[in-house]
Image 1 (cartoon, rainbow, N blue to C red):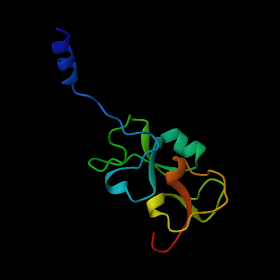
Image 2 (cartoon, helix red, strand yellow):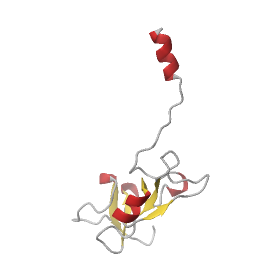
Image 3 (cartoon, rainbow, N blue to C red):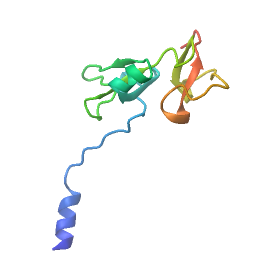
Image 4 (tube, rainbow, N blue to C red):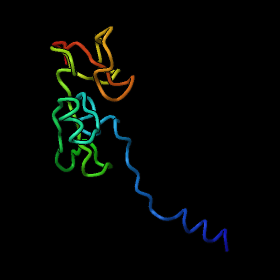
Length: 114
């Protein structure tokens, strides 16, 4: 009986949410977009919240309050933007953590090539 119950529980659909603070998906993936609570994006980080439209939701598997967030300039800086490490050409050195997302979301100097 326990085995049958366990197997039936394993077959139930599971809702998976991507982590808050993760990279946006779809069209927004390479735009310096991070999934954050809309209010935190705007009030804490001074960012622009992006709800998106179907089928290009920036954070499609997250709760309704989690939107894409683009932060430019970085908090406490000018002429820079928060970018994912693999898109950051020149990181801003010697500054405190001024972008959310840990070590993978950095304050970077803006360049002409994006």
